[in-house]
Length: 217
Image (cartoon, rainbow, N blue to C red; front, side, top):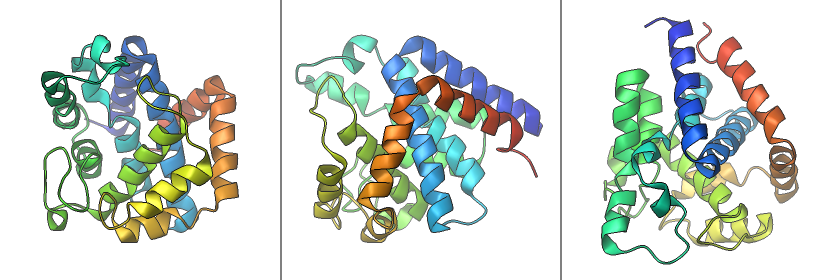
């Protein structure tokens, strides 16, 4: 598949997610844009911004196979429901393996719920995981903590940063925490305020980035 075809495939998958579950779609827009900003501002993982952005954008595409009744459930999940939720990284990987077979995209999808201490969804040892997946897992968790979900209260940027630092060396890679925290509280607050202010503009920016840059040489 050529570059234009990959970009078009990404857009089609994103629209499927938008139609199926609006909250997951919005989360995907926010985390991909924040991840892109972080990669640019910190100059980490040079040369990988484009595929990592795409992986972040579609990291939850496997939730297309999870019933919305579970995704939106406010009460605690049953054991069976938790087991199903924990399949979504693998489901995302399988979608992308067929549609957009780029290693970094697949890594972000498959590993975004793995932990530094090895107690993530698939319990994969940290020495088997790429560093950029650990960094994205922080971005993913940060958005989850600072946006309204069916199952949690919203934290401030400061509170979320405190949680991230507190979980350095257990849930999160210490090196990834150091990179993420290069963005100040004020910077993060400004980015999140901008992202939350105009969802339509954010989507348009992402569409432009997809069509103009993601697979450009």
